[in-house]
Length: 113
Length: 113
Image (cartoon, rainbow over all chains, first blue to last red):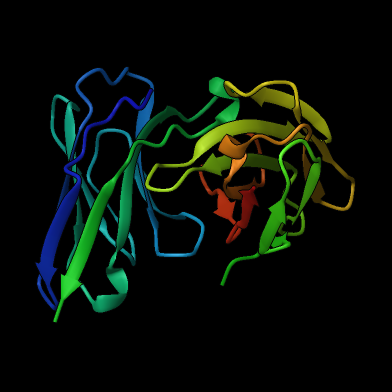
């Protein structure tokens, strides 16, 4: 079973920041937080990952709380093309579970004009 | 633009038949994973191959089997198809088992009637 809890759906206005929360209260010390998204009719796309420090790349920012029990994915300026299902996943980076990703149901983000 | 190609994109089979799905990984990616995604659910891990050997398996029966070839292509075989096998089958490749950078294909939509 997935070790994360996400809201089933969220709306965001185009051009505004989209903040997607994720709870992972049972995360282990060696587990990373990963975010993927899946646009309709496509395979999942890697967005970002982090251990305990905040991370930023060209797609998004990841904010992890100090106790690591929750995190937030931030899309700073959402566009219509960001409409997708967003998955928050925790997994060991090295040496565990043969690398499989355990997906939950994710959050369906709808960006509206 | 994804570097992972899956074929066919859609397929209809009859219950009891056998099916082979194919995946062409990004050049140099020595790890390939297969996932099953039922409608409205997140992808579920089937198994992973690393350097042509299976090195991880999810909760799927033995009638789900696979192969990985030296040219970075791979196959998912399903015998004795059941109606519940109807799903989107996704292939994901990466450079190493523990690499976070999984690249997914767009999947094969299998319908069993």
